[in-house]
Length: 315
Image (cartoon, rainbow, N blue to C red):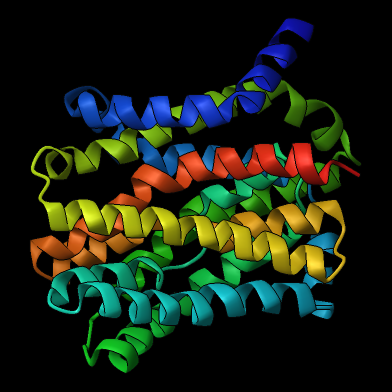
């Protein structure tokens, strides 16, 4: 068991290196990692269950009783980031409406489910992360089309039932199951079961990163100067999401766990949802900025996790 635990810790400590390798593998070998695309929701569900073993119903409900931290993160994610993405992309790529639409759409989507796992990996506040994911996801059938209409003048039909059922399967049900196990076993789930399966969950995270990256293989092989410029914009803007969440939390004097969660939940977006919307309702070029998020955000999560550990430190 000690070797198994050390294996999991080794993966976590080397994620800034492992994440870009997984992204490169997905881009280079889409025929290998693309076949796992259909099981990604199942993998997410397993990861959410493991993370929820470290939580209780009381801790999640506490976030809604004292919602200041949650509302601060959601305000940044749902309002500030989409508006800034639209304004800056319009300034830089105003001649290409598709790229502006893609950059805006990427930051209209909910907080990423995978942020819950990154928060768990770097000892974030999991109840705060879960609350942010749930609220942003439940609100997304309203916030996504409303934001696009206000900023772009576009009316987008969203598959509300499909999106909600997907989020229920990946987040709500496994999260409830994990907390039920932990509460029913009086902490055994947190103390024993979660550490036992944590290394396997980190391996699943590597597979998910590679699988998601395989979807952008074609775009990476047909780059133009304008697309390269958009990719650099997404890289810088995505970095700002993590950094702003981190700086605001630090300025407010939040504890380590809340600081970690603020950074990851501000920087990580549900790219899968954005890619589906882009492919269904917009021209193909709109997909490119959205998929660039897949290339960068997992790598940036590893980088900022390392920064938090080394610069900010743990409690």
